[in-house]
Picture (cartoon, rainbow, N blue to C red):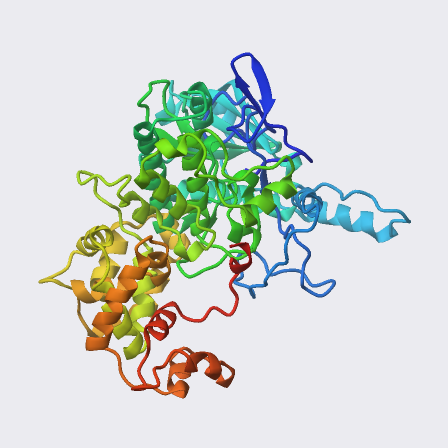
Amino acid sequence: MGQCCTKQVAVSTVNGDQSKTSNEAPTSSVTGGGGGGGASSHSGKNTPAYSFTASPFTSPLPAGVAPSPARTPGRKFRWPLPPPSPAKPIMAALRRRQGKSPRPKDGPIPEEQNGDEGERERELDKNFGYGKNFGARFELGKEVGRGHFGHTCWAKGKKGELKGQPVAVKIISKAKMTTAISIEDVRREVKILKALSGHKNLIKFHDAFEDSNNVYIVMELCEGGELLDRILARGGRYTEEDAKSIIVQILSVVAFCHLQGVVHRDLKPENFLFTTRDEDAPLKVIDFGLSDFIRPDQRLNDIVGSAYYVAPEVLHRSYSTEGDLWSIGVITYILLCGSRPFWARTESGIFRSVLRADPNFNDSPWPEVSPEGKDFVKRLLNKDHRKRMTAVQALAHPWLRDESRDLPLDISIYKLVKSYIRATPLKRAALKALSKAITEDELIYLRAQFRLLDPKHGYVTLDNFRTALTKNATDAMREARVSDILNLMEPLSYKKMDFEEFCAAAISTYQLEALEGWEKIASTAFEFFEIEGNRSISVEELAQEMSLGPTAYPLLNDWIRTSDGKLSFLGYTKFLHGVTLRNANSRHR
């Protein structure tokens, strides 16, 4: 579950016999939520996590108008820069989510308020429909973790399949479920744990029970401690090779979750447990209390997560799975240098840093880190979420690439291919030219994805995309309605796509722009476009191609050569990129 937070977070690191406040990996913080998913020796070192329904910034909405709910893809607002203390509305929203009364204001309280509060409390349905025989099935032992919403205990099975087997039991008090949101959080956490299955780096769910006082979530026991504990035990840093081993496991399970239509939304070192105390013990992701189901083209808009690991677009209330990759970028940064990329003494300062500051790659030990390692972190910590790598692309990055390790299916290719087959002939020609200029690093990823579609005689159709999804389907994928995207790929029912066209369909201009060699790629692509795709085009036709109105004509006029009426190099790159009417990241560069 989410975690409570304090007004200020004091971070202490110990260097020898001296303790000092710094931006290094934390040794102390506020307690975590619910003790996580498995068992570990929590010692109050958890990063503060937030789960609330209001933005930390002043709302541009009229007074009395609430933002759209989390599952509703609402209008995307451009939020102003954070006020001097965005922590105040954050804390107020957090108290509302937890069912606490807001701080009293001066003046009388309307008489009907208490009645309404009591009525809402009475109307809450805290019956989850889980088994009622927890006490007969398990014997509880010592507490191993504690958070705001509950605690985790060691337990042993008394009968059934788990007889004599140690397990972890997350116990959530019903007394603290004082809002419909908090009840839904518990229902969704259990539903996600039950629906997700089949990955070695995912905490194993056994069962859920309830009685009149608590909900009991029974999971596998992980006795190796948190990733955070290992970081601290190593003095705050990992070697590159050891860091790679950790990040590969994290990316693997996150890629699995994203394919299944689940976004975690609270990835941090405290939410990864080692199964045993062995140095090479497998890592397991835990705590799906803030997770949610998400369709491939859906955007979420409720702000949740942990301050140091939250992505910029989450603060802007329009995000998808890319937010998890930002969090992994923060974790990687910490593993490689022992300090946080974004740090401040207050919550408002942290958010301001996330939105506006650039990570430091100049100070020690970054000069000693490999160029591939630095590039990997930079591509995950890109403030423009469209330019960030997906989890599968990150696994194919040169820093982590391993020919002996198979890449999983990437749901992003479905979104990109869907857009390609619905694009205009000119846009498809532009993308085909671009695909001929990409580097071998990108081709390695694309070849792996094409193979996973199991092409017949060198071609794929809609059936290949459908079969590949079906092979990887779990109950979570069905709950998230991931396969709905196939309905938007219907034109592939009537045509075949070879690897060359697949490359054109499955590349992202935004991601290629993030590469250091983008200028060379773009110029080479334009040479191909001049030969095979460029044609004379009017300003009016170009505007129609880009779904723009007459007000855009002066801008588009600069993209067309006066000599022959064709797109110039500037016009080609702008046409590939598209016009972004609202660029949330431009003011932070």
